[in-house]
Image 1 (cartoon, one colour):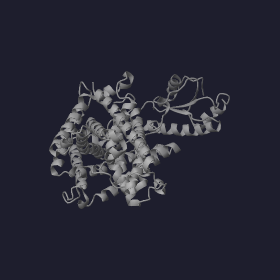
Image 2 (cartoon, rainbow, N blue to C red):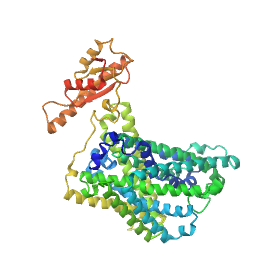
Image 3 (cartoon, one colour):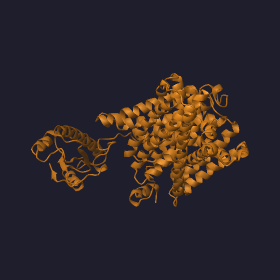
Image 4 (cartoon, rainbow, N blue to C red):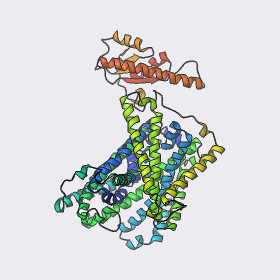
Length: 599
């Protein structure tokens, strides 16, 4: 059985990931303990007491972009997410490059996560001398990537349970750290209130943007949950998990940041140790004899993320292969474990090889690799927001909710990320300021890495267009009014006994029938509107065009009738588009709604 066929029965059989498990993957892919430990000290040095509010500001474009992931996933629950959505809305070529960027970002970050897991694993168990052995750490990290790749292929059920446990453990440790730091601050040092706590611009625009880039890095990865739409028991849970993941992360980050910043205020926001991870350096003071818990949290965070980070890239490659954008063999799924083994194996091997290559260049080259990730992430996040607006453009102007949720929200998120992309490119453009301190191919190393990835993507795109052009000839799509981002008739449970109104005629005729039945229409009675959108006697392209015209007509009738019903005190009537002609649509609706009356 293929992956697609398997997913069609997951909800009915109870198989697949639960909402909680999808949230665990979304949280773990961000590597919260490691990310927070890494960004708090440099962020506090940039913006001081504004650090918590800057984290919130950094969250805004991510949260707004998560709306695009949720609403696009609702109508196209494809595991390829950004690749699939951009291909549909903007075109196959931009979609290909977006999917390529998703896969590349996962490959680039795996080495750093694996190295962190190995290093802090040694430190957690008191093996400091092994942690200082660079060759041993590199070899073990490359081996860990391959091991986690194998577990992702053969142990999906057990690994997701482990992912869920690790989520609770590291989030609990982080929150306990914040509470302990709060107690310590109350006993030793509590600064007077400063307006900087609420003013993200207190240290200037440049410092704010630089700090926000760190914040975006800390939140990156939550969308891994949305790649599981075909593997969740309910496909809609993937979009929900993505949104909830960002909220869990924001809450945890801000709680910890508030009290860490209070503590750092004593040192004028200078680092308190040599590791560069502020939580690790503060662990002895805050946690005392159980300071190892912070090392454990960073170790578990990086370990869990080493596996979960493979989800977005492998699913993007899987989706691209299934649609013909990449060789079909990359879309193979394991006959026993039902995992996308071909794409997982490819990404794992490339990630391990890339890590060994970069680590052999210099110890700092991996830092430059991480800097290039921000460019790729901001690119495909921003493109996803634009795809949402383009795909749902009819709904953007159809209602206030549509304008805000699939129009203005994703637009602000995309523009914000695009601006940060530009600023990010400028901030890493000087080779002397890079971690390696020298130019690669005439550019700063982060820019060289990002440019090489995009150029390779374009070359592969050209080859695929020449050898397998069918995918790239597909037309762009847009959602009609039967494909709303918001729940319509069949997406919503309908209680029996309401009122069904046949809208398969002009608005004037429908309103006349409503007015003639004034005793039937009441504000307390649920109302469902039905319209048939299947044209009779047509097929092929003619049928598609005619159906779209009917959907437009149905939307117009629904809009006028809903306005009239609001004047009669009826709120929240439900729209029901039926894939049938006018007469059949009413019969089908009656079977679904089981109304007490039909007008």
